[in-house]
Image 1 (cartoon, rainbow, N blue to C red):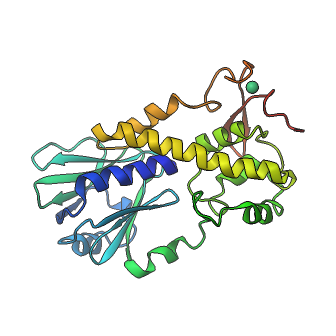
Image 2: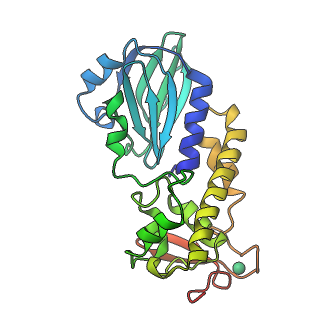
Length: 271
Ligand SMILES: [Zn+2]
């Protein structure tokens, strides 16, 4: 599932490839991907240019001339760029034909992704329930302390709560806790100030490292396909066999229904 670094990489890659391209037609092969009226979606986008590519949490925001196109990739959504005479891929659901002869394909094996249009000035109001971005100044000790002090849930679960901080998913949550030497089942309201500081700084460190990794390999790709491959090499806990710090066997448990990996020696429950 694409998390913050993958979504950021998709935004950066598309900005590099189709900034200022204009849409001449939209073909909607699977209407459920579109929230709202698909005809209206199509009509409003024809003639619009891709002006700016942003990200908020795990949402992609394509700023067009008059509207914002919001896209959530969910489990497996991907974008590809092809020529207009190229055949469609299996699982291509929305095709944006561009004036320059290329097409942007939205491909989604699981069909869980969604896209919709929103008025430009209303774009950010749709994200009112999202917590701060990890790189915002407001994601600081006093904010985290106030939030965590009201949560008895395991810290792993709280890291996945998008109203706490936007963009972290299952893989990065494991990595952040491993780097911070905090057990994933540790009750959120029992973290010390020092541990909260570690979580904040490791969140930023790990996510920016992953964005840089995605950014360097993605150039030759037209989708998020290449990102996961490279990032997997720098994982320390998630889906790993042995701890690279102490050599212990990495343990897998379930926390809030999600497969969770940690080192029993480096991440002690009472630490
Ligand atoms: Zn270890």
